[in-house]
Length: 178
Image (cartoon, rainbow, N blue to C red):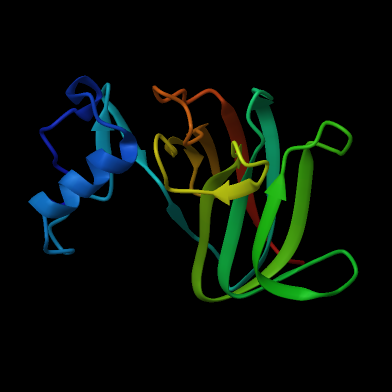
């Protein structure tokens, strides 16, 4: 069974990234590899692909953000997301900033009928540089599927010593474009 993985990695002393690499080694065949790892019974992954109409509107809302780490999310389509000024891009990174609205919405066109989502974070390095990252350390999330067109992502940023899936909670809704 594709999604069956009997190992719960939470008690193994590994990061989410190390657990995913372990699972990759255990299931080298992509067809039989589970799409998630188990973490305290939660189905944790580093990225999600939502089935969407070819033309629609994606709305994303920050529901809760712990601000000790700068966090955000990425949206990516095989096609375009249209920004407010009309520019069309295929990959959009949005950071939480308390000065701005918690909700953003963008028209999109997806040639393959998928919208990809993952969480991102900033690390302030000892040398003063800032690194934007994803899929590293304890970065990952579990998905609460509210409906086929609405999901809530409970995200952990990478630099934490233990995952905290309430560090960023994000709602994504998809609607058809009028």
